[in-house]
Image 1 (spheres, rainbow, N blue to C red):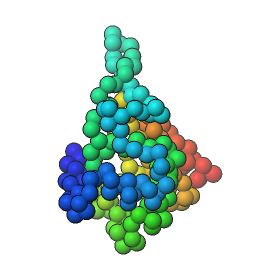
Image 2: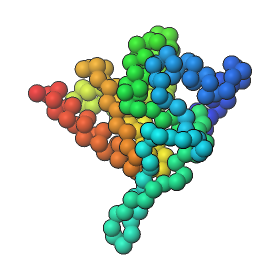
Image 3: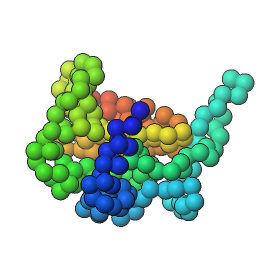
Length: 187
């Protein structure tokens, strides 16, 4: 559940006296160079937004049907639409210290909640380490028919961003790319 993010969004509104989405545009999107990112709503014309599809098993055959409930009202727990290049800019701005001061960024990237061996949650980001030494920061989000998987590898200073308009497809593609990166690092 993302209730914590919804409460945090409301807290931002109270502290700033501004609408949550305006705060995000001014303090995250603009400094990151995310000019095409936006929060689509049900009545937004989304010319460059892929339509969402969900898998449906009909008689043992997987069929894809258009998901009409994708554009739920955006909220502080998600709903941002952005091209991959702008998500890459976001990671660079965040990790380059343009969005947060060094102490807060360090706290964000420090394990706060252990999940299991090699995996912990920082502040808004997962921290993943493996026996092979590969470490990455990652975030992901999904709604019916859409999902995103974004990760930053500090060494070799690489961002991997996978966006999909098919249910759960981004995670599988990301993990295949991760295995290729691990294999390449070993060679």
